[in-house]
Image 1 (tube, helix red, strand yellow):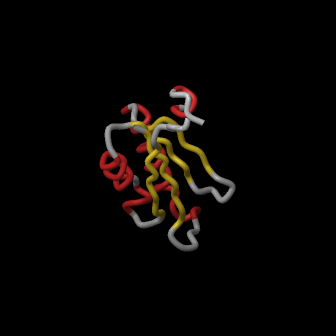
Image 2: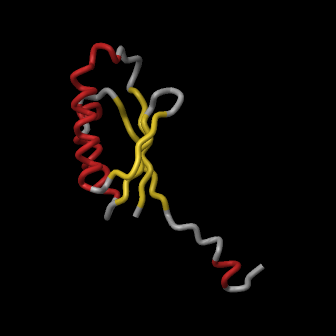
Image 3: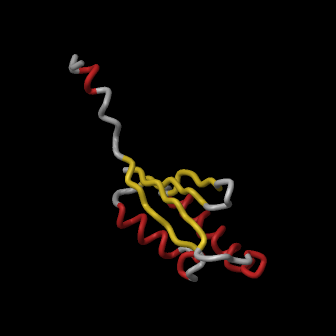
Length: 97
């Protein structure tokens, strides 16, 4: 199953004051890649992160997100969205209009 995670800052944060937490965050992100459950990560124009997980359950995603230093230090919050298979092609396969 795939999950999209959207993050956002909690309040107005001076990121220059959190360089250690940002380095720890990068290390943790790398560990998620190496575990094979984080497939991709991007930044939005607002510098919020978007993560794509592929794993067994939403509970796994939530557990891993809570371990991120920026989450555990209450600097960012997140929302998990389950990505379900697109079923619209069934209309073509089964001949429905």
